[in-house]
Structure formats: C-alpha cells, structure tokens
Figure 1 (tube, rainbow, N blue to C red):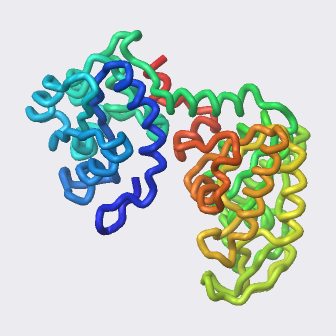
Figure 2 (tube, rainbow, N blue to C red):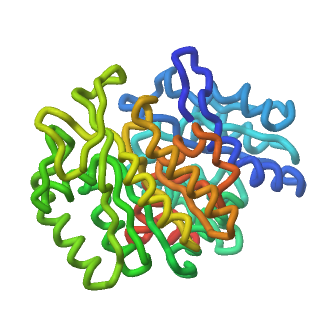
Figure 3 (tube, rainbow, N blue to C red):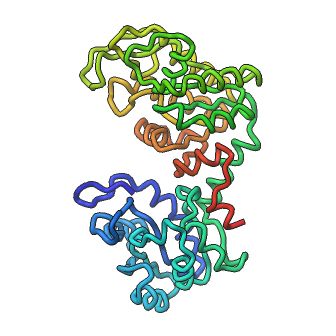
Length: 376
C-alpha cells in the first residue's frame, strides 16, 4: 500500500482486492483477524510503517465497520483481542515485519500467529514467492481442511494457470522493462508456450547491440548480449517469432524536457537514447496483438512515467483492450504494467489484472511458490 508523507493511501488496489474474501467470512458469520506487511522496516517498530495508518480507510471500505487494532502482532493485547472477537468483527494486527522472524520464516513466530485463529486463509498472492512465517510456514499448524486460499489468491492462481497451461493460440507475450537480466527466465519459459514474444523497453537495446546495431547512449547490459543472442536463436529453433522494435522515440537526455526525434532502433546517433518505441514499432506490435487469442503483458515499452515517452505503452494498452473486446484472453501483471493499465484507464477492459509483481514473475519462470505449495 503506497502512502504519502501524510500517511494517506495513494493507491488502494491491493486493499480493495481482498474485500471479497473479508466480506465472505463476515457474511458467513465469522470474525476476521488480518495480518500483513507494510514496507521494509529495518529496525523493528517504526511509526512510518505502522498498519494503524490503514485502519480508517479499511473501515470505510467495509461500509463503516469499526476495525479493531492490536499494536503488537503476537503480544498479549493481540491474544486478548482475538479471544474476545465476536462474529462479524475485524481485528487488524500490527505490521508483521516489525519482527525479523517474519521474513526468516521462523517456526516459533509462525506458531504464535497460528494460535490467534481457527482457520488460516492466505489471500496474499503478492508475497506467495516468499517463504515467510505468515505466508507459508504458518500453514503447517492448521489441518488441511482448516487452511485455504482466499478468493483473490484463487483468482490469481487460476488466471496464471490459464496462461501457462490452457492458452489459446496465437499467444503473444509482451515483455518490457529496463533489464534483460530480470526477464531471462520468464522469456525462456515462455518460449515453450508462446507463438510471439514482443520485446520493448530499455531491455530491447541489449538485443539490438548484440545484433551489431548502434544504440547511442541507450540502456544496455553488455554482459547480457550473449544471453540475448541465445534467446533469439532458441526462439527461432522453436518457431517462436521474437519481435524487436523497428524504430524508437529517441531523446538527447533522460529528461521530460529533452529534445526528441525518431530513429531506427539499431541506428541511434551517438549521445541519443531510446526512451520509447517509435511509430513503426507501435504499428508492428499492435498488429501482432490484435491477431492474438491469448495475451500476457509484463513491463512497459518506454519511460511511460514521463508524458513525452508514454505513447508506446499507451498504444500497447489500447491494442490489448481492443483484442480483449474481440474475444482474446488478456492478463496484465508486474508493477509497471499494472500502473500503466490503471493510469490509462484500461483496467476494466482486460481479462485480469494481477496484484502480484514478483510472485507472478516467478510463477511464469516455472518456479514453485512457497505460499501456494504450503496450502497444497
């Protein structure tokens, strides 16, 4: 939950996403104890990372229901308040990360948390890739019939599995972002599933330079150029079409007020950098997207945070929405793609928007997610 300096929530997407699970439990006559992380506190309890800042807004989202609060997640107050909880009541525990044992996956800490309730519901797909006390280890202290996914977790897993195991072809994966190194494993795994892989963002210039292109001062991971070439040859061997941006919107500096021009992505003048895909690349990518039946989008096409360089990312979002309207299944996941789809107002025009950044990436890389494995 991003908070501003006045501790006001600036984006409540994740909080809203858990409401169906909370409301189901309350509606069925249960009481709810909420445990969560906020930020990465280094030195125990700090006001900046206290979950008390969320109480007011959570109460509003629960139609004015009062939210009780325990200022220590495993302290005596937490146990007394949990024991006294009546059906229909909600208790929020203080930030679990105030204890280092949470991220260490400490069994003793997980056991204490488990003693607060009768049933364990994991609705935190965003941390399913971490073997933390509250997201994985705690499950072992509940009988199989007393541990379960929440509705959000179930939807996340079902939608991710639909992409990886039940995708209709043509299947296009749109992979953007700054670094090839962050996306090697996901690209390798998608080579087994996708018909087309579109590469955009800063990572595209590593591919361009690897093929002998001039990329000016564009972002490049020189130590990953060989990897880029290997990925392209693997794609060719598997008949997967790898699409690189034919042209780029270039700038003379990394600045919203920079001078701009367009150039072929493999022939960018010295001291100029590619900060978005160009008009030809937009058309090229959008044509591929519009013909597809399954779409996965992870990562923007450029520096969309600056208005001058958001056109490519916006065009991709528009094309995905149009393809979805024509019957394609589309999943958008990964922090920046989700920010972009929300910013451009298309979140309700795609099939599913994932709340899990790192967790979704690791799922698509083919890794076992501890938070899911613990429940199964």
